[in-house]
Image (cartoon, rainbow, N blue to C red):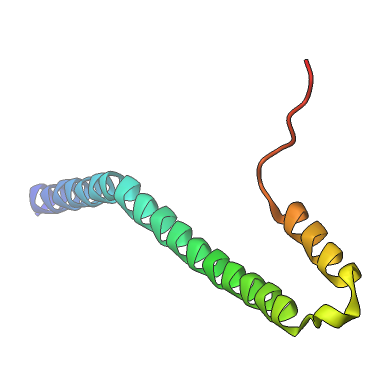
Length: 92
């Protein structure tokens, strides 16, 4: 009977070791998929934000009355310049 119980304990230990090895082996794929999912989700959120910004800017441009003067247009141009991602050229 003692031999049977030690055999069962050994088999359980091997089973647990195999399960742990599988979990460790699957972890990189799991975290890679999780990171990819987060990146896609963040990109979709940024696309929605960009769409809202462009829509609001287009609405502001279309709502500008030419008779109001150049102040509104100049303000819009400053906003567009501020939104550019290209840094200014510096001497040096």
